[in-house]
Image (cartoon, rainbow, N blue to C red; front, side, top):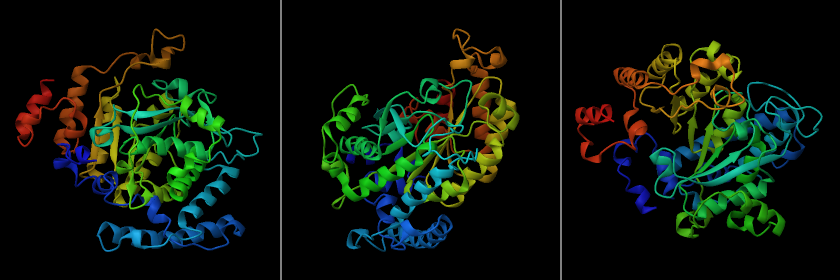
Length: 435
């Protein structure tokens, strides 16, 4: 973890991601470990769902107070006993109830995903499939660090983005391998012991898998590395079958523990179309949010990604995380032909409502799926998206973001930055403009 803590970028953005940084280097406990110290009603399995939520609201206050004290070095949870049941158990129980009338996202399908009689927009029953997991070395520098971001890709999605680069995962709910919560937890434990700096819950979209992810986190909190011991040979082989690293990594406890407890920073990599209830649950277990912010125009969002009320919902969730003082990096993908309708007004909203937040203005768009003229799935309706954004479009967005005072240069251009220019803003921007 020493090499991670010495990355040049922390000199400039550590104050923007203070909690995540401390958890990643095991100087602070991940939120889920704090949640295990918050006692709740002993009869949570007997309470009605409304009663569970009232208990959650009460316990959340205790959690936030303890989290505040941990951040300020006023208390060390290593000296506190775990509660039984705990707030983490309560969150798990709530998600188990919600899956019976699923409202994890703002589609509010209300289908019983345990009953398997009808599917919602995400096309999933209660099981989760993992397409792959690995050390992701392509994420932003604070996430990938030196050992990678421990990315776990789930199948299916509640969006239908015409340009989706992971359409094989998001559109095919049978892609990947079925994994129960213990197998999911085992994948996360393996990655953390191999030195990843976080567990990156992604897809597709992770939100429909919330119940199994929460249960996996609960198992990590309860059993630590022992989760691996409880797997059958068949379950263990299934876990290994979708590990996609090309090189073997060594295990080390030095990378993974806070005291005698497995410490895993949790990263939520999402389209941010969750309900407010789910946002509240995530507040207890997520150490850093990496939300997408694609559209400002609801018309564009519905036509291209088939989602209604996009800006209302996604902007609300971004603002919640910001107002709560959580760590986050917003991702905005510049799309060809959408600078005026989406990129500019969206970035203006961020500047007005979330000053100082880290933003990655991404230039990685490429025509895929329905926007690829060479694909049998190509849909002429999306002809304006059948190209990469031009240099002129990208530079127009960058200049506009800089004029707004957005905090985007270091995150967006870290792979192109010559560290000799750090500290000299004019030379840095000139250097970026020349790339």
